Length: 328
Ligand code: BTN
Image (tube, rainbow, N blue to C red; front, side, top):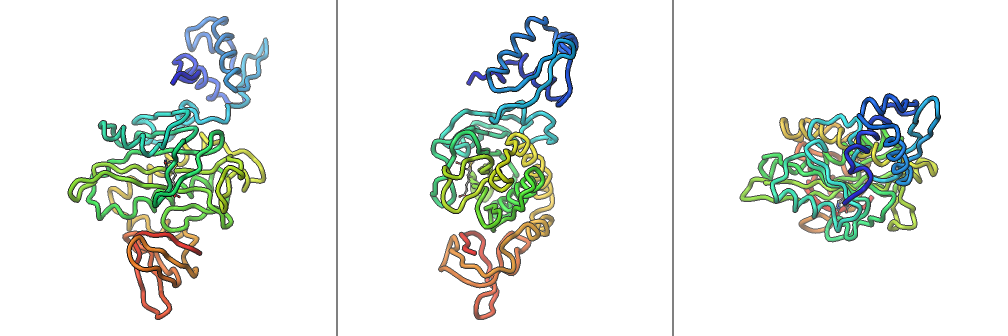
């Protein structure tokens, strides 16, 4: 896909402008740093403007980047991204795909390394858990899938999605200020409405995981009328203020990478306290439709060191569930 950001020189120019956010960069500095003429700078600035970048130009001071377009952009995500692997191992950004999870799965089967991220502006068949659909209109959501190769046995992997959810929740809180919490195992809610869902899919042979795809969908600036009942967006929660999707995704990648390396090296038990702290389920009366077995009601009392939800039922007995849907 050919976009203005895929042009090497323009990518570099965006980087130079973003490095000096809210400051002018002189034409001379750009021209020297990039080895291009003043006329070429003009031409590139024009192309950026027609792609939605707002750039102020002053004959004496130079150029200042005022705003990047509200679009998922590789350069914007990579700019200042503080990860060593996630997104750095590779990043594919599409205007539209069926599902980023499917695309990531295909790329992983082709041998892509751990840390490659697949991102789309829009999904035409976004997937939710248990065969549901995930509304993925263009212009406001994050739809991203990360390829992981944890080299773990299947049974050690059970807390991976919870770790992802805690990381995304942390990132949402810090970038948007929303009071987000995790509804076990992998939904993120703000004030009782869903803002994010996570879908993990894997390929395994025997008992070993070949790769795991963690797919993250966040309603960032998506208009509420395009979302299912019971959903919200971060924009809505921020009082109709846009949240920068590229900044949020970069933070998600950073927060998830740091937790994932602890998870891989030390196991889920080292992260269980943060998962408990982020949970909006603990202490509540819930109905559970477990992945296997009969429906169950009771009080959610704990998340154990393997990621299972511990429920006290009406008879006082403690029951553990490892997957399922919860109603608060
Ligand atoms: C759920 O709550 O049911 C999970 C939703 C997961 C949605 C994300 S969007 C990116 C990735 N690609 C998909 O097709 N689904 C996940």
